[in-house]
Image 1 (cartoon, helix red, strand yellow):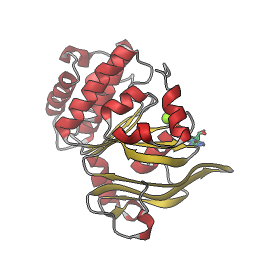
Image 2: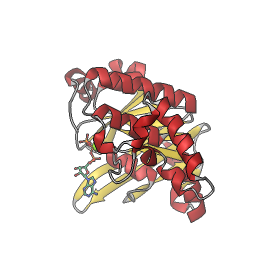
Image 3: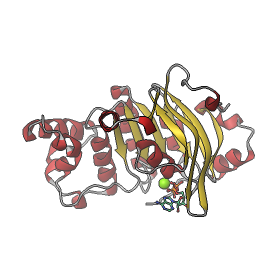
Length: 262
Ligand SMILES: Nc1ncnc2c1ncn2[C@@H]1O[C@H](COP(=O)(O)OP(=O)(O)OP(=O)(O)O)[C@@H](O)[C@H]1O
Ligand SMILES: [Mg+2]
């Protein structure tokens, strides 16, 4: 089921994100080991795995927040390690990210959070940025008036919506969502999953999400990869996961209950 992408220099056709033999060590601690993962254009991949298995770290390596110890990440046929500053900037302009801990800035209003990257874009006026923020705020089912509040005044579910609105503010074609429903009750998780599914479809974005909750994983993915102690131990179509024949995957699915974590 796993791709042996190292053998070839070129990524397979249609592969957008190609992770090759990626490893990351912090001092003596080997966290990611030889991760191979290919994500096709339009895929909605969910990463599952226990706490501390390396899911968030893998995303951070892909977006360039953490440098891998070895291995490579190819995006659209290009090795990210070889990107020039301007190529790097262009790539960053293509992706949106929702962090595990929202990372909304309390010093800014909700709409300014949503428009954060738009406001950095010198070519866009503040009022144009506000218009786009309002549209995104509405698209996640909130009233535009919420834009004038501080993030601290919002419920957990509203903060998740705002985090997602910010991730899609620049109409990215690659989305990274780290635990978009963590800490929410099952009903609110469902609402957020619907918003994500619709938002992703509207953008036509390729998505990598992390979730600890199998209900969400099944709902928002067409592919699932399970990571265990830094290894990808299973990778395949979502509908095939119940027949994985992998005892670790089976145990994870069986024991998975809605986890209220933050
Ligand atoms: N910057 C860092 N410095 C040192 N160790 C780190 C760093 N980032 C992550 N780690 C370690 O890497 C391991 C994996 O962390 P990661 O955040 O990827 O886990 P996770 O799978 O996302 O878990 P969770 O489901 O709890 O969010 C942990 O043992 C963590 O302590
Ligand atoms: Mg994490």
